Length: 136
Image 1: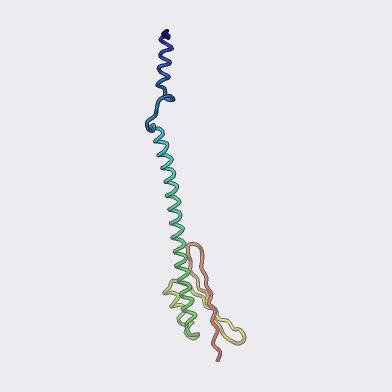
Image 2: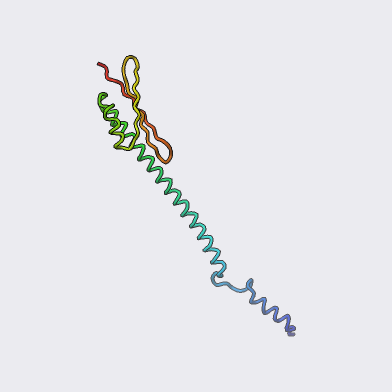
C-alpha cells in the first residue's frame, strides 16, 4: 500500500531534517561563536599582561629609587664627621635626593640627623642617618 502524497513528503522531509542528517564538520554559526569566545579570552589575557607589565615598571622604578637613597645614605655614613655638612647637599643633589640636616646634642656630644627624601610613584621615600661627633 502506498501512502498518500502528503504523508510521503513529510516522511521524506524528516529524513533530511537537521536532526537526522549526519554532520561532517561545523556550521558557520558555531565557528563564529567559537572565534568570539576566543577573541574575548585573548583580550582579557592581553589586558592582564599589560596590567602586570605596568605594575612591574612601577615596582622597578621604586626599587631603583630605594637603592639610590640607600646608596646616598651609606656614602654619607662613611664620610668623616667634619666633612658631612659640606658634602651632604652635593652628594644628595647628584643622586636626585633631597637632604635636610638637623643638628642635635646628646650627653654633651654634638650630632647630625640627616633626613633623605625622594618622591616616587608610590609615595615619598624617606631614610634617616644619625651621626655623632667622635669622642676626643
